[in-house]
Image (cartoon, rainbow, N blue to C red; front, side, top):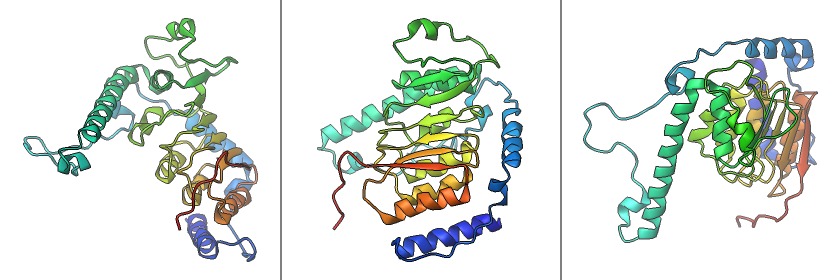
Length: 279
């Protein structure tokens, strides 16, 4: 609790100063991060947790929110297409997005019966991404149909995901739940995913305390405010980011994360193109 409070205060100072020329006297309580044996014990505890294989997606911690039964009117917030009837192009794009989201959720409900690892593997492959299994050196994507056919039909405790690469697929914030409960996952790459933002990082930091490498480079919607949340990942050893706006607070946040976690190395890449200033 004290460490979290100190973290919030320090980040507030960083965003107020926004300059690397003003020295900040930082004194952070990081006893947990300095004791690597405690981190290893915590990771082993998480990986020993047995997930009960159920027949519904809600059994894995997913909470489905909706209107009360018997409601005849919509309870969702109205969209732009509800007001602008003549914008048929926008309305059609919205309908396709809703249909795509519906198909993804229905497919995931079928996959989750065989466990979170198998469900996440099939979801990533269908999103044109690639995966790597534990004790395997080769990556599996859509082109490896022979390897995909060997996937178990039922829950298999030896089917474990170690690395996931979405290959730039614009994954939705709501669908991040599809890759949760993977306590043996070591590498997660969202390189080039334009839908990954600060809210996504806040959600991922809670669900992946065992992650060792996170690649969020070329994600133009990620700012220093999203990097704040990554202090919750004590096992993180490599973080790959891109500072699109050339913000000093962005680099300062990476340095702070390295200071909190002595085992972390932040790799700040130069953007291929620079974003236009807001002014």
